[in-house]
Length: 290
Image (cartoon, rainbow, N blue to C red; front, side, top):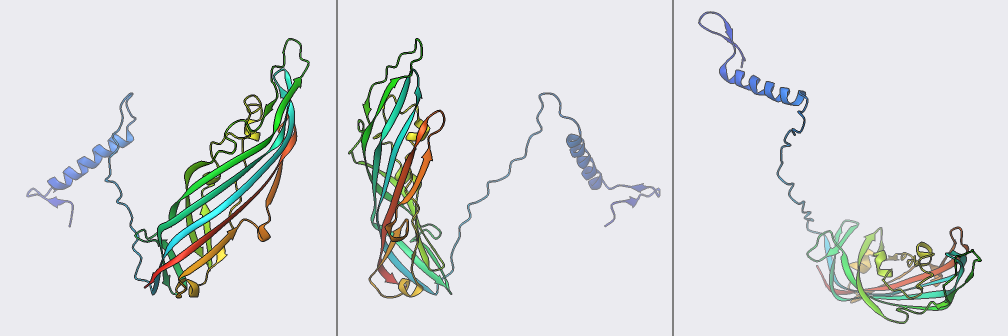
């Protein structure tokens, strides 16, 4: 279709609709190209929200449903010997803090395994891409040792810090809370992932009233339990007929503890040695196949 036509006098004219479109485009170009006036804002057009994306898996070749039971324990130990200036004192902290964290997920989480050829997708029943679950955490921390001080011999700056034991607060008290975990399956290996917060509580056992501030970023950063190594699980086991499958996860080979060490930040001297171990068992209790 031509955008122009001759009138009865032989003059080329633009149709009314085309003139309206050109005029509208000219207004838009003028608004975009013209500098914004002081205090004036060009309105931003609004768009409708993007609808949520739902993934619907096709019908699998095989299917198995399980009840999931998780039980595990982590152990962490920190031994420190640090010395440094605090106000008018030379402070020293010597001692060991031990943490035992027990975590549990009883029956109630139903896990489904779907086979597509050689690939397996695991998810919670009714949640096609989710394997998350809540763990019940029970943590107990104990400590031994003390912090003590002597004068730094600074004129007019007295040393007022006294000896303080490390087992003053929360030691030996069980603290209960919850943390998130999930199961992952890939290339014939099942893995249990636990949120690092599962190993951290507000337990103040091992802290001291006057010594904690001096090394708060150092002494109070209790080590995390190391991640768990996956356990093998074959397709024949998943889609077989055994009433239950048992998976064992550890943080190292032959139950070795993971050890690390840190030097105290200047102007403090000495350091801290840490060791930690993590172990868990997952039982998949078969509900049905297909």
